[in-house]
Length: 388
Image (tube, rainbow, N blue to C red; front, side, top):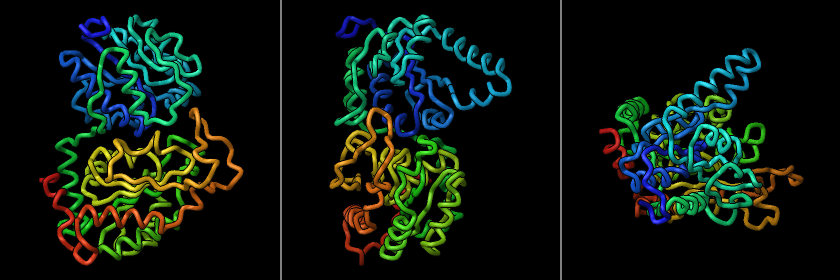
């Protein structure tokens, strides 16, 4: 029996339809739920893009996939098939007879449907009064001034759970480790050369507004070139298949020490290769949180988004965020909306390569505990354990 009077549930559902970063933010929550209810069956409802992240989570028993965009496209040509897909999903959820749902969607649709499906305890946030179908709710005006993980910790208190460990969790499967070993061989990276990950695009969850989260290509080129030369490092330029033109141009401009990896890896391979890097430099977005989950130092570049709320977490000396603190207009992303920008993205445009390079050099030399002259020691010492 919990301290709040609730009996221990046997079947729990977590709902989070958002992107990779948001799902990784929930991994401390998943772990805390499992620790508190070790005998319970824990399921997670997510989108198709994040299922590969959650498939690697050791605390989950089942996944439910709801991909809104796919259903919208299907309904345009075969409306009845789309309806049948939704009904099948709802039927599967109803058959599980969940006792508790932890709803991280911030909307009312899931609360309504899960109430109709008979889930008695529905815990979530009451954002803009959209939590009216929840039985336990916390009123919020959006995520501000505190990290999202901290909000999740407060939510868990509604069912008597304490969140003791706020680190992100993303395990590798054996197939991932085998694939990483093959990639390192193909790339000739078993000789101890340093590896630096560069993620110059991203922000796909923002759709047509993704550009408002991206630092300049010229900035990434200058940083990648300078670090590869200073540390004799191989720069792996990562990206989605849609990012291939950007990544290809950046890799070519950096020079022979850069490798374009865009669209060439599975999610597991990407996570594994990120875990072999000495440093990952990324725009604000999922990849920087993947690196944090692998305990890899990160430098993330933030424009309209507040890194206090959406940055790498927990905040340690291994993670640095770069942003222009002198602009009174930023962060302008509030209540999950991005207003029109009258300043031509000044928050990103005014970040200079040297601003990023400074913290990159500090982290690389701190991680090595050596001066630049001594950085030729094997950089893949940690990678050997990963791929053995």
